[in-house]
Length: 338
Ligand code: NAI
Image 1 (cartoon, rainbow, N blue to C red):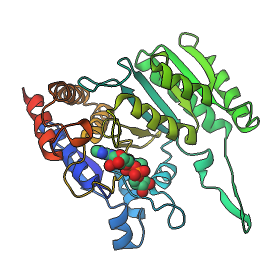
Image 2: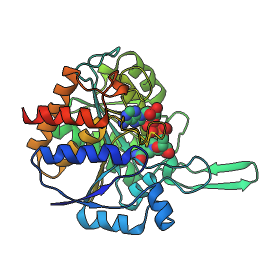
Image 3: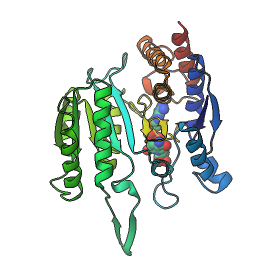
Image 4: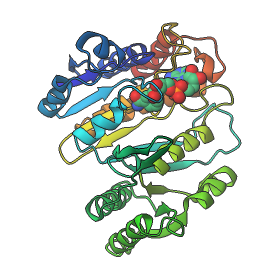
């Protein structure tokens, strides 16, 4: 089977290579079709997200992606944002759960962040009105709002989850989040068997920091989702640089295509040293296998990761160990085969 592989840049090539090794060790034969994106693509093609990369994903439908650097401020627009918009990958899904062997203030985190991926303040509608005044449009449309909330409820239904929380700031952004909230309520009516709650995003942040066990599936617009995903990753990760970023997987789903990637970025501070934690990308690859109907292999990979964390051997630096990307991958493969 052919699946697109975007290695990305920074730690991307290191961690995606680890994920490919684990997928192979799980007995799934994948013919990876490499597609360029990120800094190397910008240097080679003068374009960080070449059209041929989008075409490859359109052809093969599924991709595993490493992180890609986006320079801050001027320069090119985030290729991640463009990829999600270009392929209509409207739903970003990030499951965040407490992990064995990782000491954190909370032991009972088990939530899924569902983020609208194509609109909001990341729609890319920005312009300079006059020098010194810049305007960004926060785009919310009824079809996209309904689509993402329905996606969250369907996910909750398929995964036997108890509650969906819609996060908003409708008291301030009355029109945009007012519309989103209206759509959320209408969709929730179709799912009376799943609990629904609506909460201001600032309350959600406070409660996540105090008692994350309250939450189950959370659904929200783009920018809120970006922030909450990292906050949630921090709840389950060890103290220190990166927190839980090296552990949390992610998926971007559309009706036609799906791209799987970790929450973390290209980590330029540790790139090329062979010390990046590959677990987030390995778990993203497991989500990918689940998506393509290889749920059994996905579950085995997830179990092997849990056993590795529990054993605490060969862990990377962000997890308090002295292991490398290669040694922790070896350990995961060992547990996969035991
Ligand atoms: P980052 O996630 O790359 O790094 C934040 C901190 O976490 C750093 O200290 C880094 O060393 C650590 N870290 C991240 N992943 C790790 C891993 N797997 N193992 C061990 N430590 C890890 O976030 P930052 O620095 O804000 O972004 C760097 C670049 O990545 C930026 O250009 C940003 O735009 C891009 N980015 C790309 C994403 C994507 O392609 N999906 C997502 C987020 C950021």
